[in-house]
Length: 369
Ligand SMILES: NC(=O)c1ccc[n+]([C@@H]2O[C@H](COP(=O)([O-])OP(=O)(O)OC[C@H]3O[C@@H](n4cnc5c(N)ncnc54)[C@H](OP(=O)(O)O)[C@@H]3O)[C@@H](O)[C@H]2O)c1
Image 1 (cartoon, protein in one colour):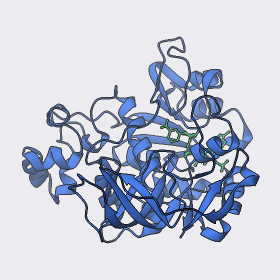
Image 2: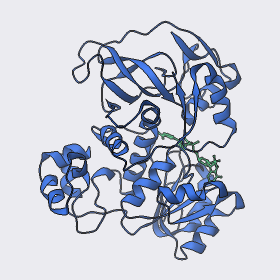
Image 3: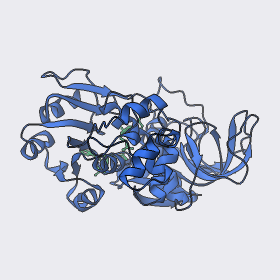
Image 4: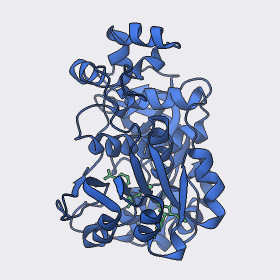
């Protein structure tokens, strides 16, 4: 099969080459790939930035996000069969930018619903699930944001995936199994959430890196949950982030993002999700956060920023049962959009990676197989 192969460290050394079609082991699906998306992790792994922390067994196929059709299943697979359309995020050493890819059965794979094409389907898994993990961290890391209420006093929105429409239906359905199963949390998560918890409703949320893979989902999900979202963007992307749901936009190219945030929210924001800065570089952001507020990042940073501002870092994101299917359903029914900034054929995948590393690309880059 043709695949995007890293023969050694170095983005410029990536090449499209022949590799053997992998065989599905126990608990694995072999997918015929239709589309695969790039993530910053792919760049870091190939560039050698993770050397010593994440092993790279050269030559290897890069890519973790995938949309495709199940070709064969390994022993013990019970939820999928040949012919099923799926989307998934794999382990880093599996490789998805190829004609075939292996996927582990589990919470990081789901059926691709009608209404979600393979290109947007490939762009969803890693960024969408990480966005959910970050929002979960905003509220202490327990309940699923998909089960949070949009309004104080109302039940959770998890029933949406079960087809409920009115407030009454919503409450009725959310009282049964369908609500908590569809919300992707545990039963306990659901009942805690269904007591009217609305962790983002009315909160001022600063999103730094709002136009990227994860940021696009954070802005949409948080705005949908009633947050007042302040998003960073270049002047060209102002309209885009407003359409996603941002109430205010900061041009980060003008510098001093915390100062600009304080001009918009003089008492400070309640929460900041920073998708750009890490470690000590997160400290300046704390200036924009009110006492007792929280900074959340997918990278690392201080636990305590002073004046009662705390940090939360998710480490490697965790796929939770039902959440990927729920996100896919939202995209299919038009409640969540997926921005694909550029799409390349497999033959041009090496150029796609270079462009990803060097150019401004809104949302995700997808490779069409
Ligand atoms: N912990 C985990 O499991 C996990 C999972 C996924 C990702 N991550 C990490 O999360 C981070 C974000 O991932 P992503 O997929 O969203 O990345 P991405 O798609 O590359 O998006 C990054 C965004 O940040 C913007 N940006 C760059 N410099 C900025 C600045 N100074 N101020 C404001 N915005 C700026 C970029 O916009 P322009 O194009 O305009 O520059 C881009 O929209 C990455 O570091 C990634 O490695 C962690």
